[in-house]
Amino acid sequence: NPIIAAFGGTSANPFYGFKPGTVNTAEVGLKTSWTIGDVRGRFNVAAYHQDYSDIQRQSSIFDAAGVLIGSTIINAASADIDGFEVEATVRPTSSLQFDAFYSYSRPKYNEWIVFSGTTAVAVKSSPFAGAPRHSGGGSVSWTLPGDEAKGEMVFSSHAYRQTETYTQDTTISPVTLQPFATSVLPSYTLVNARFEWNRIFGTKFSAGAYVRNLFDKYYY
Image 1 (cartoon, rainbow, N blue to C red):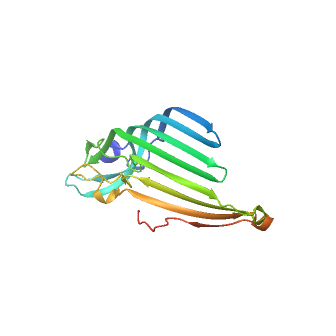
Image 2: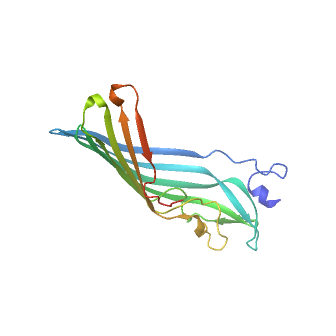
Image 3: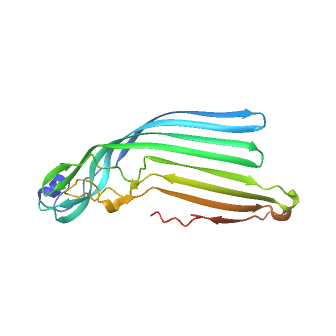
């Protein structure tokens, strides 16, 4: 069976032969903390490069007519992933804190092989699944003023946004050599909120309420 042989397996065990993926990472960054009067803050930045080899992919197998005839796991690809991350925190008062972060990621396949019939086809221009180019968010946490004997009440809200990405890149169109359009996850924004009441009336008990996806955004 030439297809099985190409995957490194045998007719008796066609799924044998793939290796674990490996990632070598180089990273450089800076972490800072600062104080201006009563205002405190932190600022962190990091840039990285990842060399990702022997990437495992469940590869669909098409015959020469473009008909799907099966799938298997192979060490199909290698990729470079470059990016950077920024984080910042500002605490203007002891009861108020702002946090923000941003991430940029640029993955690129160096090699990716799928099979059409017994012919190996390079699809390294395919987008990398699960890696939005831009993502970021922020949060605010506010400790409400009040009688400490009654406990501490804290309100916080978190927002996150990411640009579009692919949910998977393992099913490749034999015509376009790209993932099918149904794999695209559009950009979206999520907002969460939380309220906590700590040390209720001076006891050891605390309670909280949490709302995820506050505006009921359909995103997946």
